[in-house]
Length: 427
Image 1 (cartoon, rainbow, N blue to C red):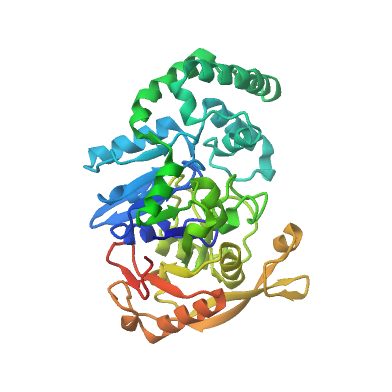
Image 2: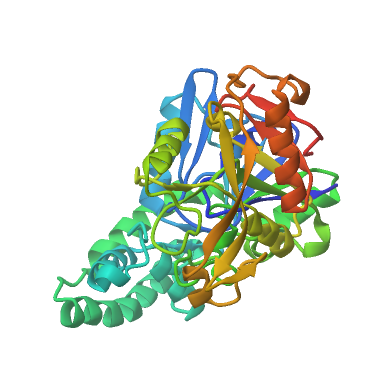
């Protein structure tokens, strides 16, 4: 049976939680494979809204096993706070599995993230200050602390001694901040060990055995393609690989087991944080999109930057991820517009570019080349089939599909569970 990967096809915040919730009763495992609590998914069930920051969206489906895989970085305090919040609302969280190889966000990671970003001033990346980048940096430099280390106090102490010898020097001598106490950190994280132990597993083995048994595994990325550390708008990116290739390394599932890649894409474009954004609207149109689409970060509450649909980015996401199906979200937000601009190419110093320019400098200088599609005034939030959409809305979808280079298999016309038009089965 298949492993199916879900990826954001823009700069994140495309509505991946809604997509995962749609297929929640058709899959057996939902796996978060990268990122940390620097991202979030919003899922609306009836009149209940759930904001998930670290947990896989599948935790809201009672028959699904939610998995936090090895590619994720975990802040235990945030994890248990989120679990407590769900338990108080009657959600069963006992099924959650956590990889023993996942890395832990430590207090010094959070401290360094905040102070280094502050010192960058105008050159800041726009991180959330939650320690994700420094944790991944320690992982790559082989100085990280993993979930399994909490079960061996001697190893944990040794790793903390080595880390604090370095981190406290940086905090005190470079940034003039107070150093952190080893014993305090050790006590805090050993205290998490007993709470985590029932959930910890060899998740790579679990997932591969599940596939061998004919079960369906859904791999859920956070952030989006243009925030990928290799394929995004570097350096204004996240510290992991949200693309479909990252799903393999982040979960322990081989690439030949993935049979479908679903790209989540908004009917317009948003991003949070610094960096280039060719279609960004800094006028009343941008504010209108923000208000209509409720474009505020799930995790940070920050205003999202808003702009029109960007076809070169969609094509790029199709190419980089091998997208087989698109889930188009928030089509309802565009209702009421007489004409809808769509970016079909970029102008870079007088030269037309139909694809994303190769260099960071060129992309920073890119200005959008627009085509204008006819809009619609009808409220489409009550549509339950593609045929019920206004003709101009249908035409908009088909045009985006052609520009993006992959079929649009589902359309979101509102935040609710029942406000999705499924043109082709995603699972």
